[in-house]
Amino acid sequence: MLVRAFGSRSALLTLTVSVLLLLTVTACTDKEKAALEAFDNGEYEQALDSWMPLAEDGNPKAQFGIGYLYDKGFGVPADADAAIRWYRLAAEQGHASSQVNLGAMYQEGREGLDTDPGRAADWFRMAAEQGHAGAQYNLGKLYHRGQGLPRNDALAAEWLEKAVEQDHLNSMTLLGTLYSRGKGVEMDPERGVALLLRAAELGDPAAQLNMAVQHIRGIGVEQSFLQALIWYTVYESHGLPSGLPMDWVENNMTPEEIEEAKRLGAEWIAEHPAPSEE
Image (cartoon, rainbow, N blue to C red; front, side, top):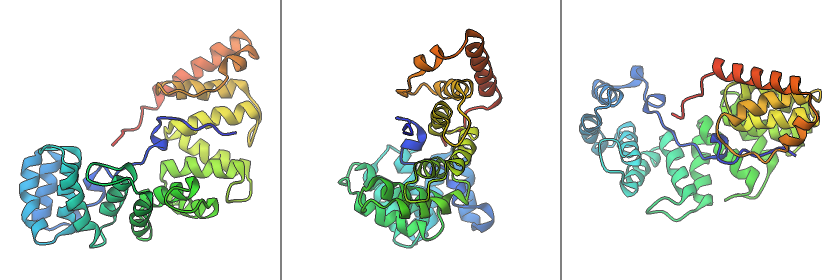
């Protein structure tokens, strides 16, 4: 059984958190560039002033930017109702990242919206069909969990594959678990481990924990308590619970092996700074 990392970033619905991921300078008008520059400099009130006339004229990028400011409380009091209103204006024009964030707000049941996984799935699908990797992950996760959609791991895997092609970290982890368990795809533990290892090396806690599990059980890799403890040591640095029987694992290791595993895990942590939550 693969272990879910409760509280990890991969277990959370990820909102779009960087305006620059959505509004590239080369694709912006001078006014949009001015707003982005203000945003980058932390001058959020200036960004709002620059975006507002564009947004009122129907510019979806500016509408997204304003929605994001209200969503996060940057330069303005956090206001979910205002964020929803601006996101919706942009989303209805086909702005993919607004569709993702609006879907996330339905998924969470943010203030002003009832929790509605079905509506969330609708918005995620619109963005996913435009190639938005985060939306593809969120849609795949809803299919996997049967939230707002009939549970269908085959469709989950299809959407996750698309996101993995864009190097989407959380999609690597979830798709890796599907291959390891043969859910929605033909069981392929080696492919599963390859995906989990890739995500683990990029810093995903859930993947790191699952790498420990795979080494404990010898699924897709040679059984190795040493390797399991290395990955568990890395995972443990995130301060998250696991439920793994590591006392049992250590009872089957020599003191020298335990010391070596913890040393190698600490070295890995030192060499791999934690990825930004942004």
